[in-house]
Length: 120
Image 1: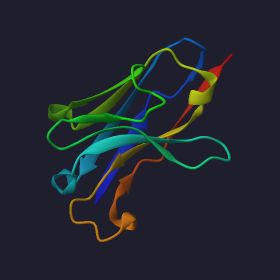
Image 2: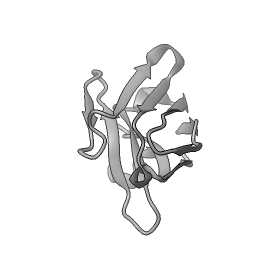
Image 3: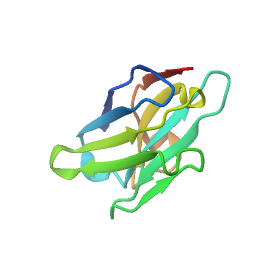
Image 4: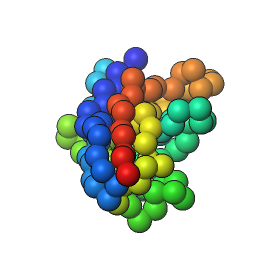
């Protein structure tokens, strides 16, 4: 099992910045990449940014150019630098780590989420 714990959610004004962090613990050798998802109220969860095990980043269209994902392997942590925040970025942000031996999505790992609120 892998435990994912997020940090950094807060309330900011439009145009502000936030840095989210996720620390992984447990059986981290089962992880195949990591990423961030978000879910706004009454909306489906969407991928924000991800990074493959080889360190290749991928971003959702709505955050390209504003968010940057990075990883610190020595600390088993994943980070999301968010800039130029907009009210539509308001959501609960979840750390996600695919299980390389997952048979279905229930085998993948999720954090508990951290809330981000962007006010206009």
